[in-house]
Amino acid sequence: MTVRQKPLSQQTIVITGATSGIGLATARSAAKQGAAVVLVARTRDALEQVAGEITAAGGRATTRVADVGDEAQVQGVVDHAVETFGGFDTWVNDAGVGIYGEIMDLPSDEHRRLFQTNYWGVVFGSMAAVRHLETREGGGTLINVGSINSDFAIPLLGAYAASKHAVKGFTDALRMELRHADKPVQVTLVKPSGIGTPFSEHARNHTENEPQVAPPVYAPEVVAKAILHAATHKARSVTVGGAGRVMVGSAQLMPTIMDRVFGWSMPMVQQSDDPETPGDNLFEGRSEGRLHRRKGAGRPFSTYTMAVRRPVLSAGMLGLAAIGVMALVANSGWRRPRA
Image 1: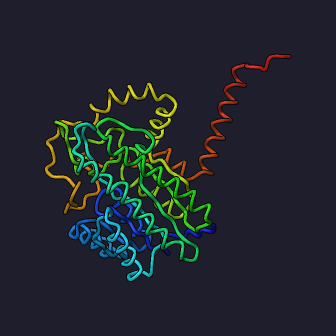
Image 2: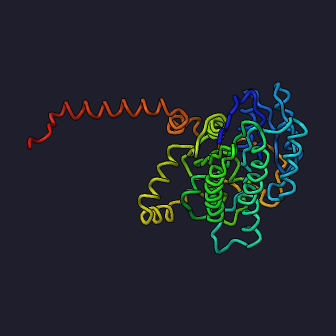
Image 3: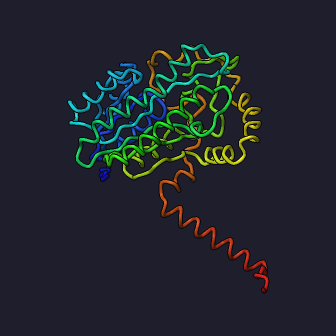
């Protein structure tokens, strides 16, 4: 399998969920770096607003209204990209919705709707993207946006976590199958930590308080950098945010203890005293395109994610740390015991 990942300035990138949060940050950054972008969302007004901003700044953008949970509409995105730009080089499955509430209290139609967007939207987008990319010389890249909740679950976002577990399983299996079939498609799973998008403000809420993303919170621009790095560099998966990586590691190493920790802390830290935002985007899109949550963007960088994106720098930092540890040991007077 030979995949040739072009510089961003030579790419056309399809982005679902492009009118808010991570999708919007990715679209703006990609266009600024010279990529042509195909913006996909359910709301025409928000799409036209984002596309207008990009073209006014000298970028190239086209829009397509589509519900990613509808396979025919997703295929329509492919057809539109081919008609407008001759195809695409990278496809980003970012569209997603959330529900806050205890699993036993969730209506079945809401649970199904969440999976229709978060899981089936990724399935339909991935299959449509692969069918197109495998026919292109040099292939291309498929990027699925999961979550650190692809690796562990938390209370009040149980359905969301389940959908992101499903996204990880699907993405990993698809990657292996494409490699076995020698298809020229690079598959990357991006797993953001808590991100300062309007996610919690747009989610369906069954709690007594306005929900909020559990801290620490990173800016959506940090995720956009990771996504666009994956569009130009081969990466199996990328966790965005060092705090999230620590949480994943803790859940994997100490599952029983972390069940108790998350079970006790998450119901509290995911609820705020703010007035509840009217409406949600579970069944219909929102008309406004917003990058950040009302409380602000969050941390503007992640040292961990920067190191992952720059493995040579990361290795150098680890080497310096190792040298420092050895120097401390030598200065402490420690000696190997004689046989």
